[in-house]
Length: 126
Image (cartoon, rainbow, N blue to C red; front, side, top):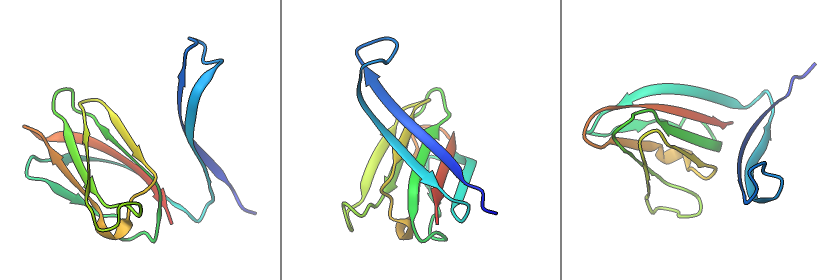
């Protein structure tokens, strides 16, 4: 017997406080038991740190949450859409970044602003 799991991340923007008229919504995918899911919390220093994804053949979704209340976090990654060009995202304190397009062979490079920060990293792939 197979078991199936469904992880759903949704962003909705609406002009109504009850979200009855959403302007946009996105971020759903369905996963099966052969997929790899990880939730990891690490400390990232100002000198930068590589977070390895190369053990996967593909990534469905990466979510990085900056758990610090003061300092921002820079994330450098490569994507299929941008090829060999590095993409850089700055995550403000207490904020989250979601990305479905990360090239696993190039990993993530995380760099804290002025002091080390705790970071939650969630990803799934095969």
